[in-house]
Length: 166
Image 1 (tube, helix red, strand yellow):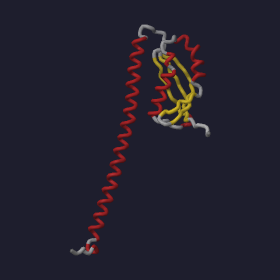
Image 2 (image 1 turned 60 degrees about the vertical axis):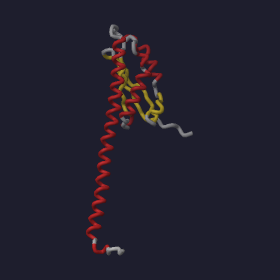
Image 3 (image 1 turned 90 degrees about the vertical axis):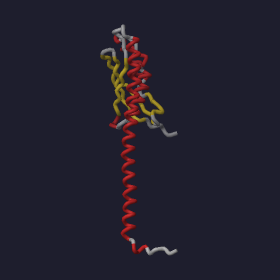
């Protein structure tokens, strides 16, 4: 059995190489588009889970306090990034969840007595470190607290926390 001379088929080898190169490039482009769509889907799923959880908690709390018209019925935190550092949406959702848990003591309190506990909450959450939020640590400080329509709205400043060297 003889090996044919490859000098006779340079066009065939060139065409085969271009075909394989096109297949690899096409597969990588398709994979990047697929991963981008999957990443967007994961973000949307996280947001929808947060909304569902918040809505069910709000419904339970509203049913509990539906006959009391001068109490705080829900808490809505707003996150402000420090120094323009954008914070991931999933991290924001986790921080909001933890803030709601920490501030849940205000639910059911009279809106006229908010000033008694607001300074305590401000001191309690001043430069508080939330550890282990999606693999990072964050410092949270309350900037503004406002009660509107039985909803306690809280603006907090968030910045990444750098652990001191040990």
